[in-house]
Length: 279
Image 1: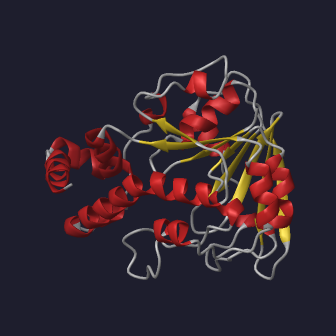
Image 2 (image 1 turned 120 degrees about the vertical axis):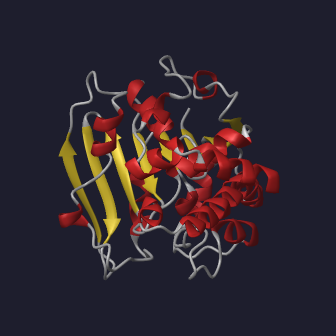
């Protein structure tokens, strides 16, 4: 069985990637950030696929050695990126028109992370951005994809998979995840506390809404799915894998020094309490 995994930001994506590596599963991570690209990790090789300005689909390959490093967060985090100087121009973001031609390579992989661009849903600004014309959840629910894809092909391939939609039950822990790692730390460095809190609250709202929005999308296309709790779910059982790691393993990434300062002075706890009182 092959799988896809959809979650919000701070929703277990690194955990899913580590489990793929630990169990020798080929992995395709579709990046949902400023510039769309896919990272494939397979047989100690890492490949990146993207579309250049002008429509050319490109790829680069690099050999890596994952032996005894499958759960090393620092190592796998670095292996998850290419050298931005040779394969991507962040100053000229592209809504791809041809990247879908490489989708068969993506669907070869055992584990696909964040399949929404495979259905055309990519290019929506981050929640809280002043230039936000439409948010990802609205697009999913309204059926308004921005990206050109072969929709019939992608639907057919996703119907062959076990499609996991992750959600969070523990609202306090979810808020802690976002306030300590889901925002722009430079806002705090520059003294814009209110803007930092505003953006985090909006992103938390999106994170709570996204699982149901994806469910609406998958139902529209008759794509089978199952919901997975990040708090009580059993990765080993749902992914049918032999090796696993504690559910909090990937939470060991270090926080930025400015975030640690706000943890130490108690402001983050105060913001979390304020947020929980509002929902």
